Length: 211
Image (cartoon, rainbow, N blue to C red; front, side, top):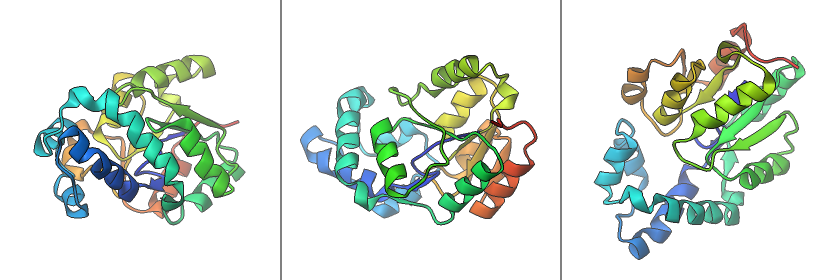
């Protein structure tokens, strides 16, 4: 099985918000407050960019700076409650766990080491915000898997779209960035609202990868 990182396993919204605001004045886009994250949950990335006057063409320039800020403030990033226990349970039952994120691989591995998590078999990073389908397709080929043998867990509509492109079933978690109204249009296979419900769903999914 494959997990997104930010908003799915890790509660990193405050750090990303602070990083965004750090560069807002320099690059002439609007800062955000926590209420904005709630109010824009059912907006697309393009709609949010327009809301905060952020030119998407600047993304390749700013994203590396945001991830560098993330690394410098790793101590402020925490796993959601129950995530470590859930990963440990899955690993104990023989499940192969991979993380795929647009965040830097180094950042993710730093947090896993800090939290003493050894249940994750592999960390993959997508260099493009909208390029996860390419990474997933490569992963399937390398592991000699059919798309239905992989289950992806995430919180954003862009990840559902990526999975739909390669016919990989998707589980959406409600505690992340995007809202139900937005993601429901892309028809994720599973919708879960608690870590307990997520674990139950993963264990019942009959075609997850096993070692």
